[in-house]
Image 1: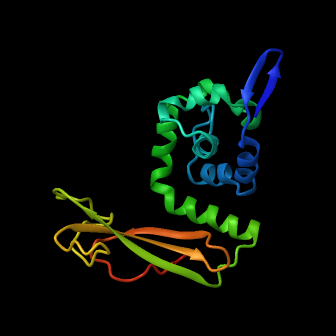
Image 2: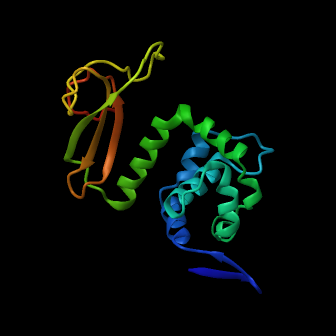
Image 3: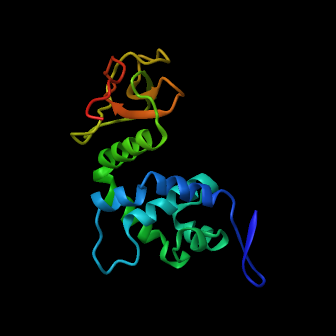
Length: 195
């Protein structure tokens, strides 16, 4: 669906209003901005950039360097109040770099907001893990990140190293509430802790 913003000027609207409303209900920009503040001279906060990036992923995913073009075609200015020219690849990369060290806090806070806002029952969680088999050399891995190791892969390729991915979903509707990557040798289902 298109919306006419001026005589002879149309922009695509699609699900942008719905996306914007959900993002505002969850306070995504506020959560990101609290954990990742910007300097006072910035034209956009990291939270504003991330909200638009989420809306892009939900409506018509574009490569990061093309998000500004997407914003010019879609009603991003009208729905989010953000000029498309401010959404260049460098600004988006800067926001992604800023949130990277705060991801656990952002995900946990947005998740807690969703639980409270939408009444998601988390008294019972269903947990599962899967393995991702990897080919090639995996040397000099950074400490503090899941390590590529031999384990008991689901595809029974014991000749390959792996990483494990775990997820926990709510028992009342299958809504993901927890996820994490684990060392390849991890053997148990994920147990959410601290969230």
